[in-house]
Image (cartoon, rainbow, N blue to C red; front, side):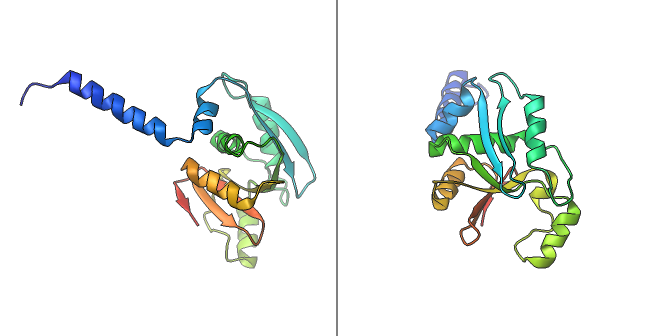
Length: 182
C-alpha cells in the first residue's frame, strides 16, 4: 500500500481531462483553444453607439480595443467608465460562436455606478443591491434575429457565470460571477 502506482494515476488524470473536455460545448472549446482573433460587434441601445472591436488578437488582449469596449459599456447615465472584466467579452464571443451568428449584440446595460444602481433599485425589484454590473462583470443584451430562449440555452450550456432570463423585457443577463441562474 505504500507504493504509488504512477502509471495508474497518469491514466486516471488523462481520463479526467478527457471527460472535462467532452463536457465543454464543441464550438465554444474551439473558440478558446485556437489562437485566432476575437471580434465583437456591439450596438449600445441607449446611446446609439456602435463598435467593432478585435479585443483579442490571437495572442493576447488588445488594450486599446478593451478601452473602446469599456467606453461603450460605460454607465451612460453618470457618464462613468470602468474596466470591464475581459472574461465577460470572452463569454460573449463564445456565445456568438455557439449561436453561429455574426449579427451585432444589442447592449442594454453594461457597467452601472453605485449611484445609478441604487436609483434603479428604487424603481425595480429586479435590481440586485450588490449587482455584478457595478463591478464591471455583467451585461444585459439580446441579439437581433436570435430567439432570446436560444441565447439563454447557449449561455446555460457554457456553465460560466450567472445567467438571467428576462423575456418580458427582451434581454438575457450574463456575468462572470459564480455559476447560477434565474
